Image (cartoon, rainbow, N blue to C red; front, side, top):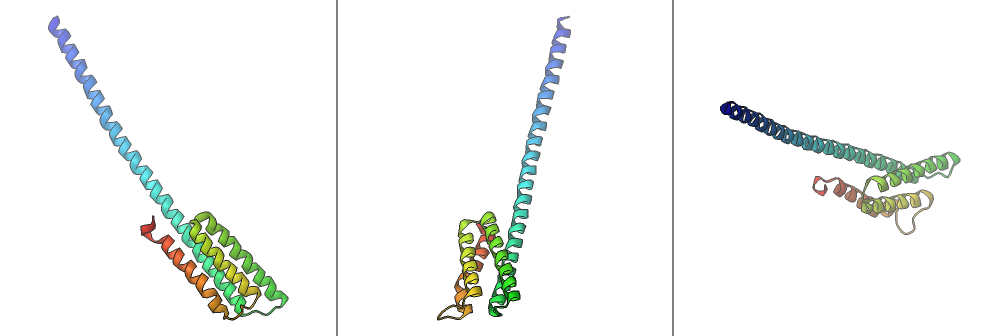
Length: 154
């Protein structure tokens, strides 16, 4: 009888040990899978944010180009003024979105560029051409945008 008890105890011990080892192995695999899934989700979010930021920059540059064209074609007519006001409104919306999605340094550069565009739309710059007036803020913004999007920044 004593041998049967020991056999039963050893058998139960083996089952318990096997169950614990199986649980530990399964828990480890699940943790690795969870970490992998979290990392994949973070990478997906980062890529989606990068695409969103890139699209915003593309839109800002597109609207800035329209503002430059409007300043160059300055006519003072009611139709021109309405068009210029629409462009300026779009610029300020883009500038605010840059404030939301980018670091403060790029927002400051975008704001300076929008102010320069706004100035040349409504007034002739004194002592310099419109292009010279825009060159500094435009290049600074584009350089800042390139640096902000470079992969080594993130």
